[in-house]
Image 1 (tube, rainbow, N blue to C red):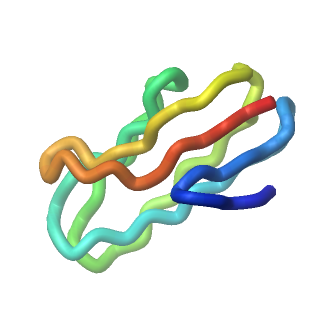
Image 2: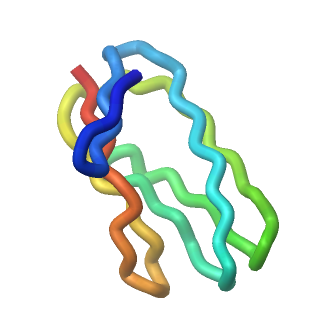
Length: 74
């Protein structure tokens, strides 16, 4: 895995694990995979998936509208 400019690059078929911690209640959402995590203040939440769809997918926090990163699968 490599990162550049807020983009995480992985090979297709790789296992990807996100550990997300927020200082406020929110929802982490990975577009394209339609996977979400409910976030509680100060508590880490984990999302694991197989990166089986090629492309670039945005991850964001829904309530705060903050862009977290882009996942590039290729």
